[in-house]
Length: 252
Ligand SMILES: NC(=O)c1ccc[n+]([C@@H]2O[C@H](COP(=O)([O-])OP(=O)(O)OC[C@H]3O[C@@H](n4cnc5c(N)ncnc54)[C@H](O)[C@@H]3O)[C@@H](O)[C@H]2O)c1
Image 1 (spheres, protein in one colour):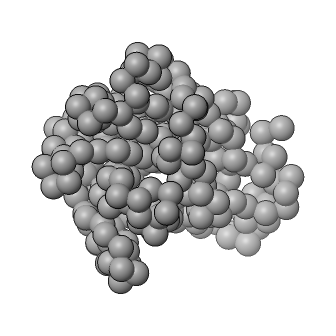
Image 2 (cartoon, protein in one colour):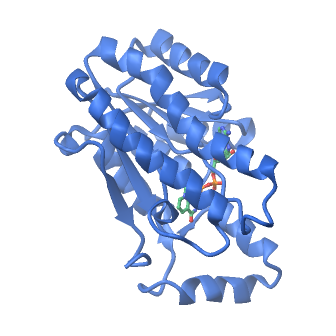
Image 3 (cartoon, helix red, strand yellow):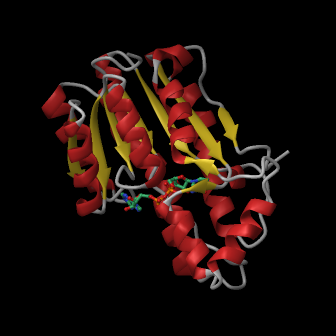
């Protein structure tokens, strides 16, 4: 087992990529703290993990709120004694150009996508230092590397994640703390399904998304979770401050 007896926190664990990662990390031996705003969906993830004979725990969390993230880390440390892995995954995908987006939409996207990573690091690093190290994994996006039409605010928030990852890596490298980002392309999750339905004609919208994919298909949440597992585990022990693109060739 690749995360045997590790304590792993995952934000946005109630759906999509976070849900897939929670189930996979638990199968690989981790005790998984599932943090999310949505209690109903996330409790169902915890129940699924228990039904498989593994261990998980739900903590209601707003990943964009400092007190909430501090409480998440404190509860995890109190319950399990340490935190080995923090997967800062929660995020939203606002659309639109800068003239279409409001200042409130900018603030919300920066809070949920970028401040959340800052807060994860801020609160978990002292606990990881006390425990002798750890691995922080963040979900950025290919939009965090290249410009994307109608995704200006999203792209800015995900590029901020890459900047944090690089600098935080250097600041805590001597503490045995690693931090890396994942840059997925288009992945089939409730978030993507919501965007497809919002475009009106679902089948046409789906066909348009697939037509943009060099591989001729959209990514699966399980495929992103497999990469998160690698970065969370000791197998990636020589990697820090970097990002891995997993996009079926979309950004080439
Ligand atoms: N799906 C894609 O195509 C895609 C591509 C690239 C990057 N990403 C990124 O992957 C991550 C996960 O995306 P997904 O598609 O699985 O999303 P999703 O919407 O399917 O699931 C996200 C989960 O995060 C939770 N969440 C939202 N805001 C939160 C907050 N403030 N605090 C705690 N939990 C919160 C939601 O309740 C939900 O359970 C996001 O950071 C997203 O930007 C997704």
